[in-house]
Image 1 (tube, rainbow, N blue to C red):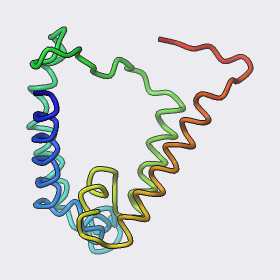
Image 2: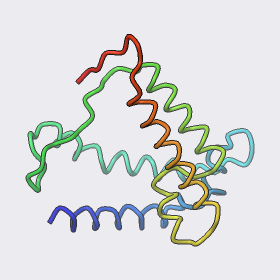
Image 3: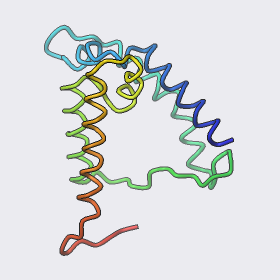
Image 4: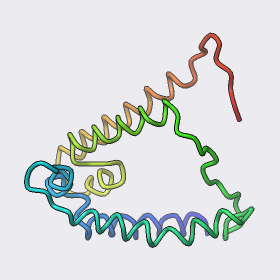
Length: 145
């Protein structure tokens, strides 16, 4: 049942990305171009997503388990640190340069274009590099759970 639910959620998410224009890099870059011909329509998409997710996330935070019986896995970190700030900066720069973020890039793979393919391959390489650096032993590093 969990696989079917995940497939359904992924399909709804992907269709929503396509219908909202998030898979169109020109539209995304137009949204990010505050000094040029700014396109504010994606701000409405983001506001709608936040509004739709607000109540379910608040309710999920009060539960010990997911509706399908699995463990509840919500982020536990609450402070903004250097790693979060640098990661957010890297994400934003990549989004601004390419016009893609991970979800829309994956949905755009179905278009058959080379740009989403290059982006996804670069994204996977970056994720692999992160994992290599994250698991490399460092002097003075303490693991926290």
